[in-house]
Image 1: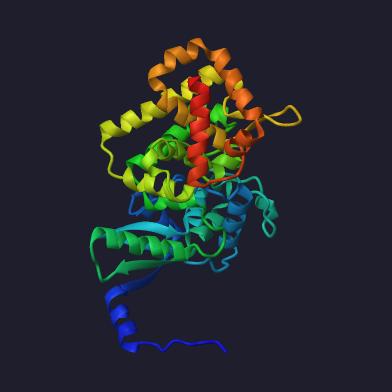
Image 2: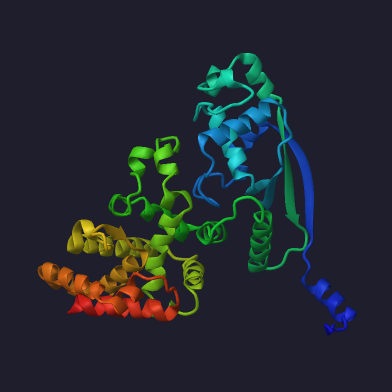
Length: 377
């Protein structure tokens, strides 16, 4: 028989009074033209692709959303968080709002429409005036969340984090890096994004060039948008892994916790510190490419094909960081160094640790140790 514990009502009520926070919800309807003004006037912020997650709606999905507006089909409300008087952060609804802003800005042509097939291929400027006026009369509801019971800034951050997580329990879940991108927004997070767009980095990881696939207005080509690493911010996580795993004292617990701690510890970096971090990453990446060439961060599989490996990237980048003072010697012994690493990867136990799946702190340390030793030798 299942044993039940007696509820301590007084303790539960005391906990509720101590920990519950008060959220006021205000609901308003806005014309699409008003939404454009709010976004362009920076009253509704964090609509750029680097916030929350990158835009995962393709042009067909965005077009179907515009078609729903034309058909006057009810649209789910967006959620805003009032972080300052009259200034709002978009917590849920980024894809919808960006679709509106981009379409009004002629950023994409309609495609895949089912009820308005005759509009396929048209941009906003090409729509008949009647349809433009019809769109201007459409409304979207917004639920504004205001925190009544305000504690310290960290407490406010926890509230924001909790609300954001709960709002995103449905639909397409955010992955860990997309969540970090929201919770730890700031200069260090911006640096990760900047470094993920570096030409050498994107070439190595086979990510389409940002210079060639993002125009001056910020419109992104399907070629870049659909890239696996770019689409879900895995490119930014790759950059973060270098900063998180180069610090021995941070290698404890799960890799996810290591990455989270790194974001938290670097939130308040100074401009000079960020410049140094940028230089550290770029120079180590360049050294890795100088040493290993086109097969950098790659191993040869049983079919003779070269495969990119995140764990190998981790180990090589950290090893080169630790041996940075010996970089000239490493370059002079480049061929020998490459042979030693290749020989190491042919050993099954070493291969399993370096290329395999273990993501424990022990495995990370061992991976770094093996590669540092091989490269130093």
